[in-house]
Length: 114
Image (cartoon, rainbow, N blue to C red; front, top):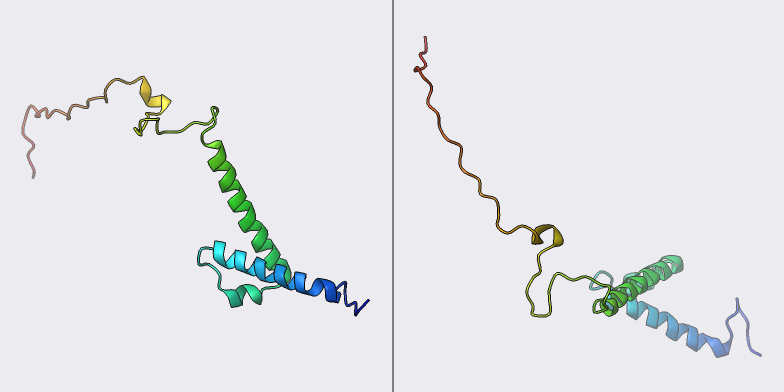
C-alpha cells in the first residue's frame, strides 16, 4: 500500500503536486502582475486558496456579465449603430436650458466713501 502520511500516498502525491503548481500558475497568470511565483508558493495554504477562489469568482462574474450583455432584458447605453443613447431622464428634453447672464442695474446715487 505504501506510506500513508495525512492521506498522501505514492499514487496521489504526483497529482497533488500538479494541482498545487496549477493553482500557483492560475494565481500568478490571472492576478495581472499582482503576484509573483515565489510569493504565492510561500503563502499559507488558507490564503492561497482564498486568493484563488476570489480570482475564480471575479472571472466567473465577468464571464456571466459578458454572456448576459446581449440578452433582451439587459440595458446598454450604446445602440446597434454604435451611437450613445441618451438616458431616459434626458430623452424628454428638447434643448438644454438657456441661462441669460445676470443684468447689471446701476444704483440711483453713487456710493461715497468717507
